[in-house]
Length: 141
Image (cartoon, rainbow, N blue to C red; front, side):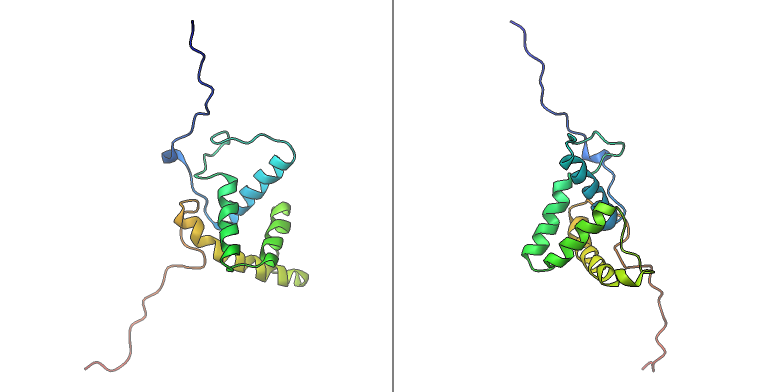
């Protein structure tokens, strides 16, 4: 009697996982994976060129939680889906996209924190840059 080889998936170590640079990058990756899944591709952990610290569903769950907490609205999710499928953000140079750009930025700002908390996004926080220390010019006592 021989023992059959194990057919369980081999999980890649999270030590090798590379977090995304921004929530926007994570969202575009998620939408590409969801589109591929919808079109019949079989997705699996550790099969891509870069190992990521999550599955596409993890990013969607963060978005869903924000929706259930009323931090984003259905309009935000709609804009994320539309522009995510195009794999580009609304342009600030196109006046017709101004409303979409506002919703896109709001959604990305709100999605950034939960993705960072889970280790999905690394790097500097969205919208924050190195602060300059300005000397106080008031009276000293």
